Length: 213
Image 1 (cartoon, rainbow, N blue to C red):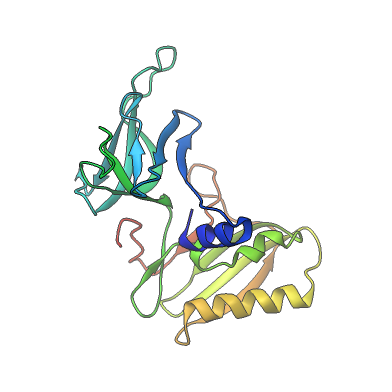
Image 2: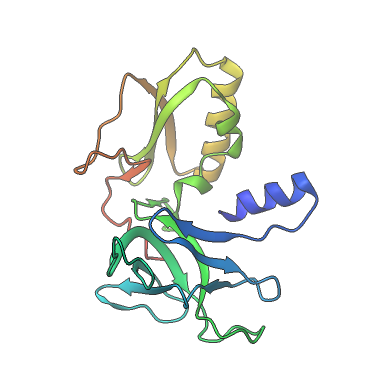
């Protein structure tokens, strides 16, 4: 859940949002502490390792999640790479519960966009939430073609209303900044990755390491 998503849900529902972290393979991996805001790891159910450049990430560093299930007897998962990026939290939570912590779940291991000002941004922070209310698109992929040029490739389900396309372009332009250019391309299909999955975001500039803050 990005900060933008949290803010929109909080404002829309008028209540505090508490996040949880889970997967199909391991069910619950962690939950947000209502006192401190960090995420407690389910250490009694799983061993969660966060790896950065082949070593254990330190508190405050981001890295890839590798999980071992402690109770998956029929189908064991041992040091299974989930494909997620998280930031390691402090060793002890201020609430006093004896669980290791995660500061935040940054998303899937996919290319982050590197803005012209050097800042790394997950594509969910660039595409406005209103995009998911626009029912004319089937699939999409945000591509950073150069340091200064971005394109949103969209597979259509119906013809997009001009007002939707204008709103989308305006919002993404604003988040990318004045040094970047942006366009929307309507395509018949999207290229699949090496394992058959379609990546939602792809950067071709090279410096899009998702573990970099």
